[in-house]
Image (tube, rainbow, N blue to C red; front, side, top):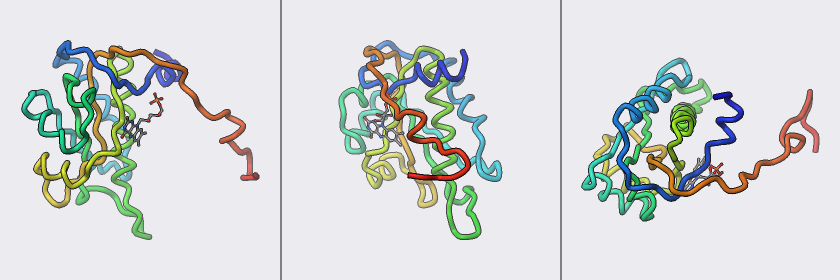
Length: 171
Ligand SMILES: Cc1cc2nc3c(=O)[nH]c(=O)nc-3n(C[C@H](O)[C@H](O)[C@H](O)COP(=O)(O)O)c2cc1C
């Protein structure tokens, strides 16, 4: 599918069918994430795929929403801080790299008519504890993944004139 159409098709799904997800679709989506660019090609991302009811139930203290916990699959996108690239002024690029991989992942899901939803407002300490992550690996985002039961409702975006400046910024 044309990338612009795919970007317009993807939306945050907050209602999932209980239909289970085929393993080959999960792999295809993760494969798209794997090909994302990253600073210095360090690929600091780690994806933890939760399919078992017992694994997903543990996330109640991390992000307590029924539509999230009841999705057939939940993916935790994490960053290995030991692997992420640091600019010489100290800026760390791990979150950006993981976000790029997440974007590939959500677009690949949309192409397969699957729903995702970026989750950033989770309990960080709880996520680290529940996922049993070592000190240097941080959860960056979660997404539920499954067949959507809702549909896109008027996606709003700023006009191009509001966000693009030619040659110099002015306002
Ligand atoms: C970094 C980031 C964090 C987000 N965190 C949450 C979240 O915690 N919970 C939620 O329901 N949606 C979350 N969203 C989804 C946004 O609300 C959504 O992408 C935005 O409203 C645009 O809608 P669309 O995804 O349908 O295009 C997040 C999105 C991004 C990119």
